[in-house]
Image (cartoon, rainbow, N blue to C red):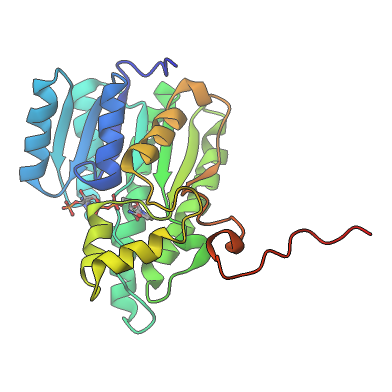
Length: 272
Ligand code: NAP
């Protein structure tokens, strides 16, 4: 399927690792030009050179997205470099464990890490996205539906991201700008690897999680996340807006029985 994304300009936040890295690679493979906003200069420049050697254009913009100035700079750089923005992928975030005991300062810091830059990026890019009749894709988390415990700031941010997806879809509909969210549950990334590494037995912890994922009893890959994002970024999804799409192997919504082998299957109620 031709996604008609050739020469489109995309900004991806947190595109040097994990899901963001998968999204950047897929957008480049579809012929997009990409701005990758990330903290680590070493990673960003290495990837920029790697893509260039492959004939692909991915400009690294160094910045810590908790600073509003970094968000504004990323949008400005995209416009100076390419003159347009067609796609904004808000992806960077961290499940930072700011729970009820952590206090208000930690909660606000978590919102800055996970939520405020989603708004800031959209705010600074709005005029350009209206001009291109572009798209916004927000990466959320199933934590907004399920909770997790001990991570108030992250859960609040992810809940707000769903709300903003619908809000922006309404606000920008008359301008032809589409806004959707893609939600992972358990995607294998450096973030996830770091979380499990803190457990006493990471391999067992990983196997325990995989048992809970109905489709294939395995983590989602970054490529599977990216495939949904490029589809939603493309004109092939031209009448899809305000949607919250779960790419999670059925983790969030399917009947608990399908991952609990010890529970009897009572089936549907007898109609007689
Ligand atoms: P990851 O492996 O840690 O990658 C995140 C990338 O974003 C890294 O390159 C990181 O840069 C960058 N980043 C984070 N905060 C930043 C900031 N303030 N400024 C600039 N760059 C920043 O994470 P991931 O697992 O791919 O997660 C990506 C998104 O998916 C997040 O929104 C996360 O909440 C969501 N998600 C993931 C899962 C999962 O199973 N993996 C589940 C639910 C939701 P550094 O290299 O400098 O750290």
